[in-house]
Amino acid sequence: MSLIVQKYGGSSVADATSVKRVARRIVDTKKSGDEVVVVVSAMGDTTDELLDLANEVSPLPPGRELDMLLTAGERISMAVLAMAIHDLGAEARSYTGSQAGLITDSAHGAARIIDVSPGRISEALAEGAIPIVAGFQGVAQDSKDITTLGRGGSDTTAVALAAALNADVCEIYTDVDGVFSTDPRVVPAARRVPFITYEEMMELAAVGAKVLHLRCVEYARRFDLPIHVRSSFSSKEGTWVMSPEAITRAIEEGRAMEQPIISGVAADVNDAKVTVVGVPDKPGQASAIFRALADAGINIDMIVQNVSAAATGRTDVTFTCPEGSVQQAMEAINARREAIEFESLTVDEHIAKVSLIGAGMRSHPGVSADFFQALAETGINVEMISTSEIRISVVTRVDDSTKAVQALHSAFGLDADGEAVVYAGSGR
Ligand code: ASP
Ligand code: MG
Image (cartoon, rainbow, N blue to C red; front, side, top):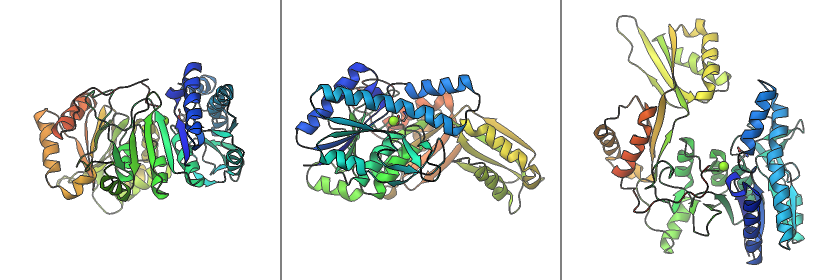
């Protein structure tokens, strides 16, 4: 008997029919002899609708109240799912994140899990019931207020619970058959990746592949908990996210093939590029810029500093950040104008970040050469470059991003023969 934590995303529980279908699947899992704990997201686009509602009422809703509102979405789905399971003759009990023991810090809208004490969940399991937990939420340790973990946070709820319960696997159900070599909605020739390491998955999540919440993968890696990403619309095997050692074992057991050099290509169109123009080329200036951004809580990604102009001794510093943080970033830098001594600020929102990810890059020379050749042959200009051991990212014009992804996907031999199936279409 295994203990399985199953997480169902919004598109898997979008309406009453889907809720009943998912209920059947859960009851079947239990009937086959496994213990199951379920984590649910809000139905369909509920979270977006609640956000719209909040913004209609108030231009800047207080974080505490916004969290209270948004957690209502998951409460609805957990209750209706429990009802549907009851109708199938099994016992289900729904729990809010707080009831399930998800203790967080008090950063509303982006709370971090600091402890999980799932006493009530273990009790329910011991009594033969199926616990249904509302994803994406917890309760703050100090203020006791209800918090949310950030968009897409139900994945993290599921992994955190699975780790605390010592589960064998965390299954993340979505509307595609797993993790793909690129977004199947953009490149129909995308192929399912059967096995991927935590590290590669983290890079993919960080560069905009929206399959899994980044923090959920970090968490799974910390506890060495296997994640199985799969579709709730089919019974096919999906993608196993595991440690390199576990993948090697799977290869030895004949469950997995040799791992390819490249596992995926992703584009993120939600970043903007900010340039701080005419910064004096002397010690302390970059520090002043990035300290200002850090103090404002802004996540930045790529950074480029130009060679300074001989005549002026000044240089330009460019960085990328999420489009939603641009306003704040400009304000933060402008507020330290005297320390940074820059001449002007420019913003470009029409960019995309295109990335290639693969653990095999470490040991295979020539990947960068092939990468830039593929972009050159497609006539795509590269504006910024950054790399990690297992990733190459570039900034391009946003209009070029689909072409770039397609070119790289083909160049690295990732195109599949058939077309990928997208069952619902929201990617949640
Ligand atoms: N319902 C939340 C969201 O839409 C959390 C989740 O789906 O994971 O972001
Ligand atoms: Mg999601």
